[in-house]
Length: 101
Length: 186
Image (cartoon, rainbow over all chains, first blue to last red; front, side):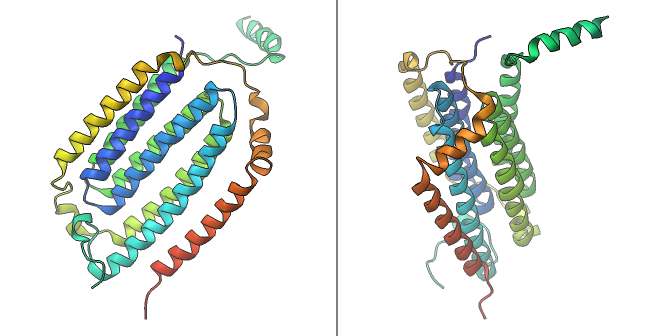
């Protein structure tokens, strides 16, 4: 059984599509942020697989930067969510329709 | 007797690099685990269950990174994602958890857009991967696994020094922003 890069790319594509569906169809903002994490992880898997294919470390280093980005994004997004929840008592994305109130 | 044979084999193999065993089995097991728990993430009603499924996805992805000879990225994945980000998620879920929210509809009316985008992306990936098959030959197997962390550290501090510093600045801004936004306004 010979594993190729394509195997990993297909798994990453499946995770990416699942994450996209989650972002588009869920109402809970926390779950939407989790789906974004899924998308970022799919990209990470792609980067590490290509890094293995081309025998370098650039892909792995880029994957580390994406992890840093994901941490910053989660912190900011959840901070916004807490601030919003304090005002409106809801976490549903389709009820967040005002810029100020 | 069999133990002695195993010991002999281990001694004979100690000098050379270990060859991976049953990679196909582990690959399919881990990817099935990752994809099934990813589907659970976007379908469960309770956000805590979503977070736990996401942790399973992240851990199996970390194992896939190990299979790709990227131990440092796998360790970072476990420590930062499963240890840091998911704890943040669980705290926020506990802060904003509502009994009422669990009884509400969990999906919005955009399922048509979701299906369309999924089909479009699936077709795109299919076409690209089928036409690009000669771009992705079988994986080469030579990589100095033992010095992976050292190589990544050298790369981060030499070639990628500026992005590294920018990342630290980004984290600082994110910390300050999160504190400012989550603070109670008097």
